[in-house]
Length: 360
Ligand SMILES: [Zn+2]
Image 1 (cartoon, protein in one colour):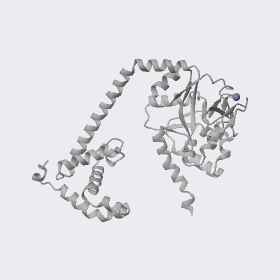
Image 2 (cartoon, helix red, strand yellow; image 1 turned 60 degrees about the horizontal axis):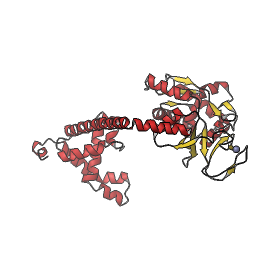
Image 3 (cartoon, protein in one colour; image 1 turned 60 degrees about the vertical axis):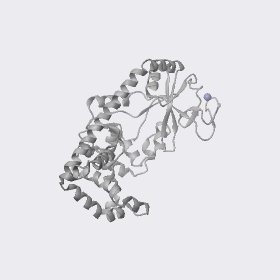
Image 4 (tube, protein in one colour; image 1 turned 90 degrees about the horizontal axis):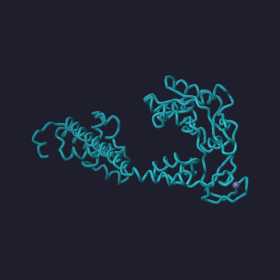
C-alpha cells in the first residue's frame, strides 16, 4: 500500500526533467497540468478571472500540495529562476493580477519559473523577455452553440470572433476591435511582420478536441498585412536562399553521419555485406524517423546502439519476424522465436572473412 500511495512522488521527479527538456523552463503549474492534477479548462477559467485562486480547483489534498511543493523546490535547487506574478490583461478590466494560492509562501513558489541547466544565457534571456512581455488579448473563434454579446446583445454565431471575460462573451464591435483583419497562421514571417506593423494586435484561438486552445491566426490592421506582404515580396528571394543553405548544411551533416555510421557497423561487423551496411545505415539514420539510429547515443556512435540498429535490420530482412507479427504474435513472442536466427547472423557478420567482403 505504502508504495502505491507514494507512487506520485516518483512520477513527479521523473516528469520534471522531461518538461524541462521539452519547454526549456518549468513552473509548478506546468507540472500539475502535466500530472493531470489541474484540468486545463479550470486553468483557462482562472486566467479568465472566474476563480479567486487556482487551487480551489486542485483535485488533490492540501497535504499532497505541500509535499509536492517541497519535492519540486528541492529538485530545482541549483537551477536559475525568475519570479513573475501570474497576470492577465483583460480588455475590459485592464491588468489583472492572479493568484494560485491564498498562502503567500506557496504563491512565491508558484510564481517561479525555473530554467533548464543547459540553456545559454542568451537563450534564457530571450525566454525571460517573452515571459515578462504583456500578454496579448485572446480572441476566440465561436464553436458550438450560438450566443450573444453581453453588452449589445448582438448574436455571436458559429465561426464569429468574440472575446471572453469572466465567462461572458463580447462582440468585436463592443471591444473596438472590429476594424481589425484576420490573418490565418501558416506564414510565420508574414505574421511576425504584420504584428510589428500593426497598432492593434490580438491572437485568435480555437478550442481544440485535444482539450486546449490552439492558435488559428492573428487580428491586425489591414494596412499592416499589406505592408507585411510587400516586405515579404521584397526579400522573398533572399529568404529562399537562406532556407536552401540551411537545408544543404543539414544534408551534409546527415551524409557525414550516415558515413560514420557505416564505418562503425563495419568495425563491429566486418563480414556484413556492403550493400546491407548501406541499407542499415540509411534506414537507421533517416531524419526524424525516430529510429534507433537517430537517438542522441547513436549520434555519438555508441556500439550498443549500432548493434540494436543491426539487429532491427536482421529481424526484418533475414527472419520471419514481420510474418509472425502479421499472424498476430506479440512483439515479445515473435522476438523470442527469431532470437536464434538473429544471433547466428550477428555471429557470422562479426567474423573477419576478407574474401566475403570484397563482393561489394
Ligand atoms: Zn457587443
